[in-house]
Length: 198
Image 1 (tube, one colour):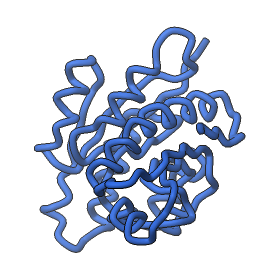
Image 2: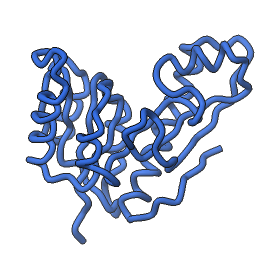
Image 3: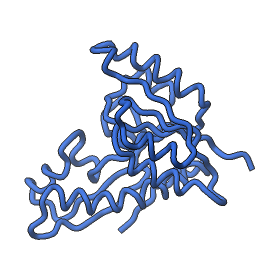
Image 4: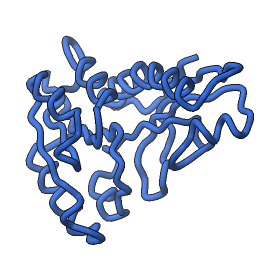
C-alpha cells in the first residue's frame, strides 16, 4: 500500500504534530514526511527529529512584510517533500490566497474553538467572556478565508465553573490530540465526512 505523504507545519512546541505523527503507524493510510517550522526555536523541531521525521525551517523574520517572498520559500521546502496532505498544527502565520490555492483540497488546520464561533486568536478568553456552556476545537479544510473552510471534525468540552483561559485551553488541547488524528486518518482515506467527538 502506498501511504499518503503528510507535511506538518508548526510554529511552537508541536504537541498536535506529535499526536499526528504518533498516529501514523501500522495500518494508517498516511506517513509524516516533513515537519516544517517558521522559527528555528520551535520546540517541535527537536521532537520531530527524535521521531525520525525530516525537518526544515523557513524563518519568516528576514522577509519582513514580504509575505509572498516568505511563501515562495515555504512552498519550495514543502514541495521538496512532495506532500499529498499539508497539516497546519499550531502554525501561526496567516497564509495568502495564492499559497492556499496551491494546496487546495489538501490542507488541513486545527482551530481551538467550535467554528464558526471565535475565529482568530484568544478563543478561550472570548468563550469565557461570552459565558459559553461548552467550547472545543475544530479541524477544517483551509480556504482563503481565515478559519472558515469546510468543517472536517469537531470535539466539545464543557465549560466548568471557575475555568480560566488556561484550564479551558488545557482541556481543549486533550481533545485536539484526539480529534486531529481521527480526522487525518479519515481524510487520508479520501473520506471528508466530519468526525464529531462528544
